[in-house]
Image (cartoon, rainbow, N blue to C red):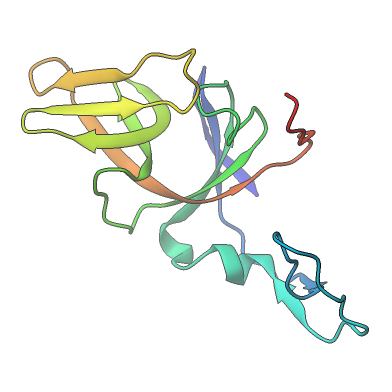
Length: 153
């Protein structure tokens, strides 16, 4: 990945560099009742092909902050597709007053609300005369790395 922009508070942006990296695919993993494991691994998967639908319009961003925890943590990699048309209730990368942020968007009649997942952060609400909210792209995938996943957090 090649860094193309750094926002002071929220994100570092990287251009997409497609490469082929085939990893073994262990098949499906049951998240309900256990099922027998496959005896032989025959398939492989390329994560770029899985995560990126429009390479020319896709960027990676490395997250900072906790407003989307427990889904996104500092260091999470967001796959942002600028060609996806936005609509309410999508996770969007927005540009507001010179800064990037990622929140769920909700379009009301004359307002836009940016909604965090973490209840410790406020919902941001903007009317047309307060600020220009640019929906820069839609988050299509999230890769969490170096995160200890515990249900007791």
